[in-house]
Image (tube, rainbow, N blue to C red; front, side, top):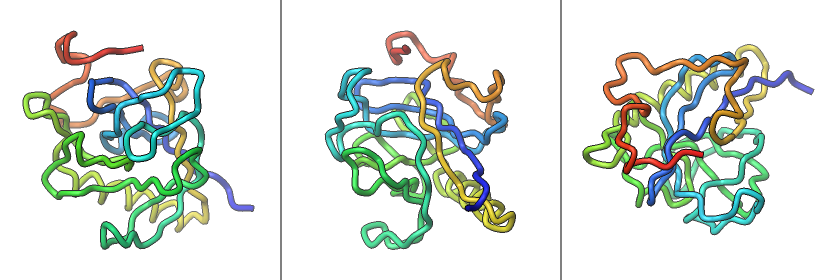
Length: 179
Protein backbone atom coordinates (compact mmCIF):
# COMPACT_ATOMS: atom_id res chain seq x y z
CA UNK A 1 0.00 0.00 0.00
CA UNK A 2 1.27 3.46 -0.94
CA UNK A 3 2.02 6.13 1.62
CA UNK A 4 -0.65 8.83 2.03
CA UNK A 5 -0.25 12.54 1.36
CA UNK A 6 -3.00 14.63 2.97
CA UNK A 7 -4.63 17.89 1.93
CA UNK A 8 -6.96 19.58 4.42
CA UNK A 9 -10.08 21.41 3.25
CA UNK A 10 -11.05 23.64 6.15
CA UNK A 11 -14.48 25.19 5.79
CA UNK A 12 -14.35 28.73 7.12
CA UNK A 13 -17.26 30.80 5.86
CA UNK A 14 -20.89 29.80 5.53
CA UNK A 15 -22.96 32.01 3.24
CA UNK A 16 -26.63 31.32 2.54
CA UNK A 17 -25.79 29.91 -0.91
CA UNK A 18 -22.30 28.42 -0.53
CA UNK A 19 -19.50 27.33 1.77
CA UNK A 20 -16.02 28.87 1.41
CA UNK A 21 -12.94 27.03 2.59
CA UNK A 22 -9.18 26.88 2.31
CA UNK A 23 -7.24 23.90 0.98
CA UNK A 24 -3.84 23.42 2.65
CA UNK A 25 -1.21 20.75 2.80
CA UNK A 26 -0.88 18.70 5.98
CA UNK A 27 1.30 21.29 7.73
CA UNK A 28 -0.89 24.29 6.87
CA UNK A 29 0.75 25.66 3.72
CA UNK A 30 -2.00 27.09 1.52
CA UNK A 31 -2.84 25.58 -1.86
CA UNK A 32 -6.03 27.50 -2.78
CA UNK A 33 -9.54 28.56 -1.76
CA UNK A 34 -12.61 26.36 -2.26
CA UNK A 35 -16.32 26.88 -2.84
CA UNK A 36 -18.96 24.21 -2.24
CA UNK A 37 -22.73 24.23 -2.07
CA UNK A 38 -24.11 25.34 1.28
CA UNK A 39 -24.52 22.73 4.01
CA UNK A 40 -28.20 21.67 4.16
CA UNK A 41 -28.06 18.88 6.73
CA UNK A 42 -27.66 18.85 10.49
CA UNK A 43 -24.22 18.61 12.08
CA UNK A 44 -24.99 15.04 13.10
CA UNK A 45 -26.46 13.92 9.77
CA UNK A 46 -24.37 12.52 6.94
CA UNK A 47 -27.29 12.94 4.54
CA UNK A 48 -26.65 15.06 1.48
CA UNK A 49 -28.79 16.35 -1.34
CA UNK A 50 -26.60 15.59 -4.35
CA UNK A 51 -25.58 18.75 -6.17
CA UNK A 52 -27.14 21.03 -3.53
CA UNK A 53 -25.30 20.15 -0.31
CA UNK A 54 -21.69 20.36 0.78
CA UNK A 55 -20.20 16.91 1.18
CA UNK A 56 -20.02 15.38 4.67
CA UNK A 57 -16.87 15.92 6.69
CA UNK A 58 -14.46 13.03 6.40
CA UNK A 59 -11.30 11.83 4.72
CA UNK A 60 -11.51 10.92 1.04
CA UNK A 61 -9.08 9.35 -1.39
CA UNK A 62 -8.60 11.16 -4.71
CA UNK A 63 -8.41 9.73 -8.21
CA UNK A 64 -7.26 11.59 -11.30
CA UNK A 65 -9.69 10.94 -14.13
CA UNK A 66 -11.21 12.50 -17.21
CA UNK A 67 -14.53 14.16 -16.42
CA UNK A 68 -16.94 13.76 -19.36
CA UNK A 69 -19.09 16.71 -18.24
CA UNK A 70 -16.17 19.09 -17.71
CA UNK A 71 -14.11 17.78 -20.66
CA UNK A 72 -10.78 17.73 -18.81
CA UNK A 73 -8.91 15.66 -16.24
CA UNK A 74 -9.56 16.55 -12.61
CA UNK A 75 -9.34 15.04 -9.16
CA UNK A 76 -12.38 13.15 -7.95
CA UNK A 77 -13.05 12.31 -4.31
CA UNK A 78 -14.01 8.67 -3.78
CA UNK A 79 -16.57 7.07 -1.46
CA UNK A 80 -18.34 10.31 -0.52
CA UNK A 81 -21.62 9.30 1.20
CA UNK A 82 -24.61 10.22 -0.98
CA UNK A 83 -22.46 11.59 -3.80
CA UNK A 84 -21.31 9.25 -6.57
CA UNK A 85 -19.01 11.87 -8.11
CA UNK A 86 -17.40 14.91 -6.49
CA UNK A 87 -14.74 16.70 -8.53
CA UNK A 88 -12.20 19.28 -7.37
CA UNK A 89 -12.33 21.50 -10.41
CA UNK A 90 -13.17 24.81 -12.06
CA UNK A 91 -16.13 25.57 -14.31
CA UNK A 92 -14.89 28.89 -15.68
CA UNK A 93 -11.27 30.05 -15.82
CA UNK A 94 -11.94 33.48 -14.33
CA UNK A 95 -14.01 32.60 -11.30
CA UNK A 96 -16.89 30.66 -9.86
CA UNK A 97 -20.22 31.62 -8.34
CA UNK A 98 -22.29 29.52 -5.92
CA UNK A 99 -24.85 28.37 -8.51
CA UNK A 100 -22.02 26.74 -10.50
CA UNK A 101 -20.94 24.28 -7.80
CA UNK A 102 -23.48 21.55 -8.69
CA UNK A 103 -22.00 19.41 -5.92
CA UNK A 104 -18.37 19.84 -6.97
CA UNK A 105 -15.66 21.59 -4.98
CA UNK A 106 -14.71 24.63 -7.05
CA UNK A 107 -11.25 26.14 -6.76
CA UNK A 108 -9.97 29.71 -6.73
CA UNK A 109 -7.15 31.83 -5.35
CA UNK A 110 -9.14 34.76 -3.97
CA UNK A 111 -12.56 35.55 -2.54
CA UNK A 112 -14.38 38.47 -4.14
CA UNK A 113 -17.08 39.15 -1.56
CA UNK A 114 -18.46 42.11 -3.56
CA UNK A 115 -19.33 39.82 -6.47
CA UNK A 116 -19.97 36.73 -4.29
CA UNK A 117 -17.44 34.50 -6.01
CA UNK A 118 -13.97 32.99 -5.89
CA UNK A 119 -11.61 34.09 -8.64
CA UNK A 120 -8.47 32.99 -10.48
CA UNK A 121 -9.74 29.44 -10.79
CA UNK A 122 -7.26 28.23 -13.38
CA UNK A 123 -4.26 29.19 -11.25
CA UNK A 124 -5.79 27.35 -8.27
CA UNK A 125 -6.48 24.27 -10.38
CA UNK A 126 -2.91 24.28 -11.71
CA UNK A 127 -1.54 24.49 -8.15
CA UNK A 128 -3.67 21.53 -7.09
CA UNK A 129 -2.60 19.50 -10.10
CA UNK A 130 1.06 20.32 -9.42
CA UNK A 131 0.60 19.10 -5.83
CA UNK A 132 -0.93 15.90 -7.24
CA UNK A 133 2.00 15.44 -9.66
CA UNK A 134 4.47 15.82 -6.79
CA UNK A 135 2.60 13.14 -4.84
CA UNK A 136 2.74 10.77 -7.80
CA UNK A 137 6.48 11.43 -8.20
CA UNK A 138 6.95 10.45 -4.53
CA UNK A 139 4.69 7.41 -5.11
CA UNK A 140 2.14 8.68 -2.59
CA UNK A 141 -1.65 8.53 -2.74
CA UNK A 142 -3.37 11.92 -2.32
CA UNK A 143 -6.21 12.16 0.21
CA UNK A 144 -8.38 15.12 1.23
CA UNK A 145 -9.61 15.64 4.79
CA UNK A 146 -12.76 17.80 4.82
CA UNK A 147 -13.52 19.45 8.16
CA UNK A 148 -15.44 22.33 9.67
CA UNK A 149 -14.19 25.27 11.69
CA UNK A 150 -11.45 25.41 14.27
CA UNK A 151 -11.37 21.66 14.91
CA UNK A 152 -9.22 20.89 11.90
CA UNK A 153 -6.24 23.18 12.08
CA UNK A 154 -3.32 21.11 10.85
CA UNK A 155 -0.75 20.85 13.64
CA UNK A 156 -2.31 23.90 15.28
CA UNK A 157 -1.15 26.18 12.46
CA UNK A 158 -2.98 27.86 9.65
CA UNK A 159 -1.51 30.03 6.92
CA UNK A 160 -2.95 32.76 4.72
CA UNK A 161 -2.79 32.70 0.95
CA UNK A 162 -0.09 34.97 -0.43
CA UNK A 163 -1.35 38.19 -2.03
CA UNK A 164 -4.87 37.42 -0.82
CA UNK A 165 -6.85 40.69 -1.06
CA UNK A 166 -9.83 39.49 0.96
CA UNK A 167 -9.03 37.83 4.25
CA UNK A 168 -12.10 35.88 5.31
CA UNK A 169 -11.73 37.26 8.85
CA UNK A 170 -12.36 40.75 7.43
CA UNK A 171 -15.77 39.94 5.95
CA UNK A 172 -18.76 41.64 7.52
CA UNK A 173 -20.66 39.62 10.13
CA UNK A 174 -23.80 39.61 7.99
CA UNK A 175 -21.84 37.97 5.18
CA UNK A 176 -20.82 34.95 7.14
CA UNK A 177 -22.03 32.57 9.75
CA UNK A 178 -19.31 30.61 11.48
CA UNK A 179 -19.54 27.59 13.68
